[in-house]
Length: 262
Length: 305
Image 1 (cartoon, each protein chain N blue to C red):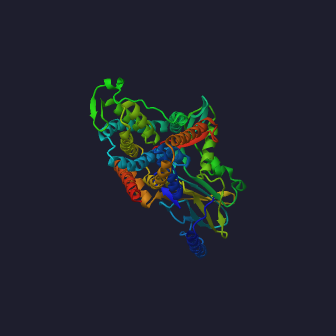
Image 2 (cartoon, each protein chain N blue to C red; image 1 turned 120 degrees about the horizontal axis):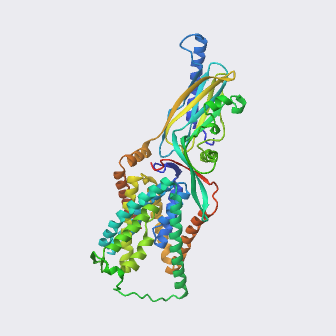
Image 3 (tube, rainbow over the protein chains, first blue to last red; image 1 turned 120 degrees about the vertical axis):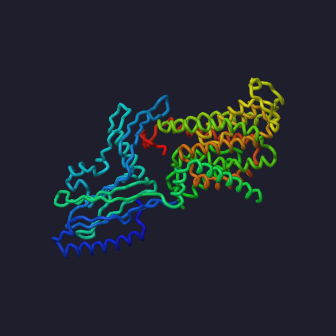
């Protein structure tokens, strides 16, 4: 967790939190038994869309919420899932060559967990396993395997490589309670964050069991010039190719003109 | 200043890219080479995905070769007819190269094959150049024995065409084959292929030296443009922003490089170039031979978007 949230979004989120706090407190005080308020967990994100433009170098999003009574909160955020192949090199005739491979189904391209206490301290191993909370509990089912070795080694390598590229943050994020009911957590997304649909599951733990599970979604997409270029390159690749060639021709020609005069 | 590259999908420092373009441009201006064989491995070292490095390389070479080609054109040193024949072979080679690229990417062997190609070509060419420059330095006067019309096996081939600018009457098949070879290398390795084309034109076709450089630059421009188009069409891996930044640095760097190059003696230049080519080749060979830090690597199953 290296990047810090921008100052503006922090101010905004504090304001939102305050507003939310007032609303929740009001609801709790006014009608404890009313049908209107049956939720014991409310959550939201400071933004539901991250737009990647040409100046994007990573960002963070604030997830905040309120609970009806004191408890612990676990947040698990995952990115779009894709089948992913893990390859292992072997030495053949003195050269290291990709030889063995295992493909895993539905590998999240981003995965981060945050909690108000270290997961081991919660004593909820069953729950963690059931909901695949934590990188080491991600399902990662093999699609096929072309190796003699145990698949576990490949699964381990997948986790390690994703952690190295900052897409599976190794440190547990911190869910911070502002008082007994209001909490916040910062989700960090590095510059190489994959595009797509993200989902955060928020678990509320009270008296040693899960009392509520909420899901909220986030969309990461390109915007501005980079989105248009990307869309253009994919939708009309022939025209894009021609324009790329024309741009290169003009650039080289202009360059030669500029320096001929000097 | 960071910039997000829309096709490479990573964010990189603008000045790093300008500097990289400038450094490679400097070397290409100094040695009179395209520099693709340096740029593509450097981009991969930088973390640009190999597919994007190669696809963008083809686009960059169009930009960096066109100004040289224009200069030769003005002096009348471009045999457009010969270039046109290269183009015919180049189309086939480029498509084959792009197809091979895709197949090998899916098999997870593209990085290995690209590295092997580089090691073989760089070592062979660097070695030959080094030996030649060493010999020339030893005895500075060397008689070049070359008759205007040598008859070889090549002249027995059908489909003869007259190339007035090159003062040749030869079969169209060898130039088509050269174009094919260069097109394949261009689309496969992201290089211009001048290092293949120039010797082939001199030694196989027997073209006069005066038109060789201009015509090879023309050939490089058209073949790279085709490869660029093929990559854009089938792999969507040409990043115009990346190419443009590298080209700007390259154009500036090349000016200073050519000034320094003019001050050095030709055989010393060739010796230096040989040293550089061998260094890049040795580095790539070393990476293939030493045990990697991590034996494992990952890729999306449908890697090529």
